[in-house]
Length: 445
Image (cartoon, rainbow, N blue to C red; front, side, top):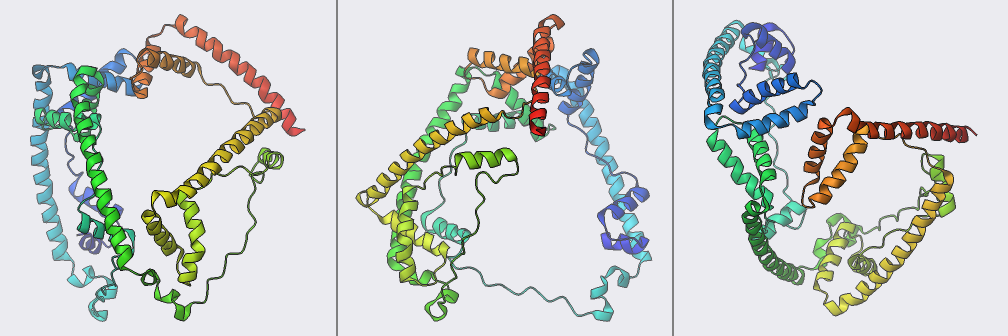
């Protein structure tokens, strides 16, 4: 269609140019009407913002959502009737538009020769057909994670999936019920209503979904344990039946086994070589930051690299990791214990070095006097304290719900109740100006 219109009007074959021609010749394309819930929310949000001009749009929308939830079926019926009328008119307009579009395309087709629609490089003058894509060699079962997953699924069956949370179980069922009650509602809107219903449920009403989740999670652990046992047995059988030499690619075999050049040591960027002078001072004064040691498997792999490379010259690092992983899985607990003990000792020393490094860094940062930060406004000061109090009163309440309650409380505060937070913000701002001036003078010096 795009090539036909572009040839008829002699314009570039781009989506913007085609859309401009269609809109000019046929008029705007009919849009699907909003659902009954969206129609109500649009009008209710406008009324709420007219009653309270200072309210945020998001808060007004949440209030409208709650009002819709509390409406009876009789009160919702006018909006559903309005939606049905709009949808009926939309179907008529869409059929009319499609008929005009077909007539327009037919007129374009009659006025344009077929040769102008064909791309230049495939016209009759150079009518050699495009070469068909040649089939590429597919990777074997041992090449790539996707192929390996296919083999595992074929031999062991599908991998058990973790069950949905209790909230997701409720959300799925509630969304279906809402869409059955109101077929015209969009899926996202139905999900938002289900979210609000879940937030208003008591602990007793939520308990059946939590029990369902616990049962599914218990069954998942059983299925996962059985799957892991079958997978380990399957991998061990593969290791016994396949020589490690088969994992080496031809270009790295003994016939062309010129060893890869070892990487040359490059200059590492120290802790003090960052973009700021403060980073330079930290690196120079504190030295390198302690690095977290690897796990027991990494220690085992490091010790086996030389042996694997000696048996298979030119082997890829990826294959070395694969072979060492298979060997590690076949080790007994007694053989793994020395590596675990070594890992525990390294982790213990790392925690000691990290604590000492953090203490020296904190003391040095206090000595250097870091750049002062601007204070948060009065509204944020109130919300921080309000959220902390709400979550102390209701420990199981989600953080976003506590934030929403704090926002509504701030909106309902009088000017006298907001004044202490404004005074606190003014005092912090004055102190920030003083600290910033002192910092700028030290920075210039």
